[in-house]
Image: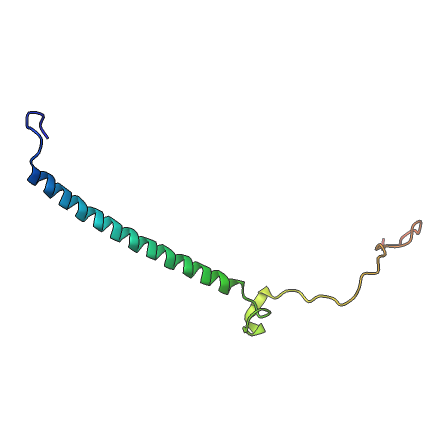
Length: 96
């Protein structure tokens, strides 16, 4: 706005206010859509994480769906508490 002109008229200011209100309404609508999209994405990620954590042990999935990720079988033997190896002082034998 050139400096030699006086202050803008009421009509110019009213038109500016109306256009700015329109821009603000559009921005608020976009923000609402973006927020809804973010919430939907967060819900989807939470659902996928829940599904990823499921195994045949904690869901109704069949055991064959585990594939190579099966846990190793656990032994039912109890530990004896002894150290492995031969007795102290005994000379071992090996192939030459």
